Length: 217
Ligand code: DX5
Ligand code: ZN
Image (cartoon, rainbow, N blue to C red):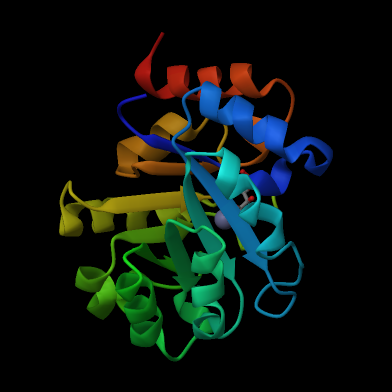
């Protein structure tokens, strides 16, 4: 896996055997684990909080990439870091204190990410780009796994890669499968989130298929 980082999203995992499934991701070469936190206010769905991954922290070396789909994320960032997050991404649409969010994450020595929903233009985050380590471009409206990729976001990915250069993470999240992953990477994404495409069926085989779709056999 050279051209991109795969971040399996545990939202699509089988929670009766979460530890085992995360172990298979790690053995299959994944380096990141995407952890989707939803509060039922910023998005219409509720997922889970810190208790779901704090125990995993003790058994996994993966980079814990926490995606906060919660309103006023500044209230909770420290707690998510205490539970083992290596990186925290918040939504620009969910806070009027984006600088405070970035400061809290950076002060704790973690990677800071800022995210935009499909309907939010890049200009909304432009002034924070040199303060963050990653932009998460949502390719579905956040809230649920298993949705279809919105092609209009490709323009944002291309623009951000051109603007930010090679030493910057551009993560894309939602509706990515072996059929479209190569196109997303070709647009300039280097961190790919996949839930259904990883956890639906044989995890090891699914990860292999995603890698092969980008890098060839
Ligand atoms: C959606 C979440 C995604 C989701 C992706 O709100 O942020 O991370 O789990 O799931 P798939 O890959 O199934 O679209
Ligand atoms: Zn996510």
